[in-house]
Length: 279
Picture: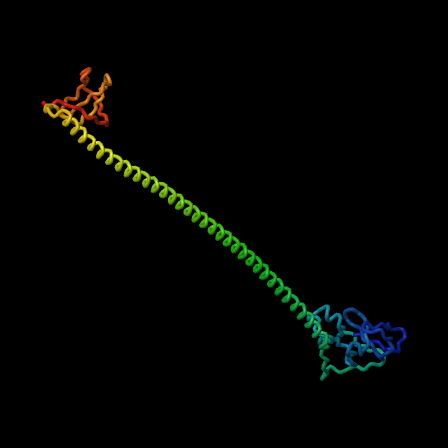
């Protein structure tokens, strides 16, 4: 342990804690680690530091060494071979009943404060990273939901268009069927009208023809009342398939051409009034 008297002009006079001259205080103390000097007031020590068994370590070395420094002042125990000299008339203190001062609390508090600050920074950084990861996951999920909603809307729009198209197609088919039914109905009405008209015309023609036959028969009988062997009847006209001769025949006559004797004959629709022999 070394200390310095401020009145000694040959001693080093450089305090590592302040810019004051070494003569600002009466005594200075030297760090046993870095070997630099400090005023007693700057080091926070008193005359007990002059004890030969006391090992002084400055605040900077305490911070650098951490807990291994063990404090500012240390008593190594019963080291009897250690140098026991004092400079500048300093007094030697007795080992019995002597208590060493506690290390400055400001040094330990500052170290703890720095460690706590670093831990808080790490916690804050970790929290920030977690929040960023959660925010990114939320953004991805939001984009996925937006894309899914867009797909659903597109699918719904396509379904609506398809439904409208099917409905329009059904309407067109129904309209086409109605048109076909209308055309068929009109055609049937026209056919029915034509059939009714033809039936009416045929009925009128038959009645007129019967009336004419009766009138002709009456006229024939009146013109030749003595002719009792002749009868005026309606004969069907048969056309020969071979010579195309028209044969006037009664219902009981054999179907045979009178010209060529061909048997296959075709019946015509026309009728004639023919005078047949009644026998």
